[in-house]
Length: 85
Image 1 (cartoon, rainbow, N blue to C red):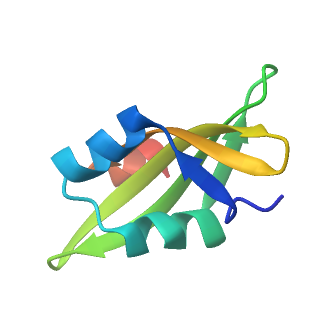
Image 2 (tube, rainbow, N blue to C red; image 1 turned 45 degrees about the horizontal axis):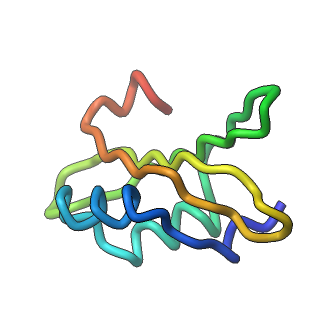
């Protein structure tokens, strides 16, 4: 699946700004996620370990496909690496 063709919802864009998540980290997660999960309704969770200011974190991107475009619903950044990866 190609997650690199994407659109952000207003909510997801707000979470990126609020949490100061860099677009390059978002795009790294979409291009090469460490973990891909999905449910029966077609929602996907992409998870990627990243380093921000020398601290290890995990970036979680939630979304679904609308045609060939991955629509990002929200973005979460956490320090709980063992819990999510």
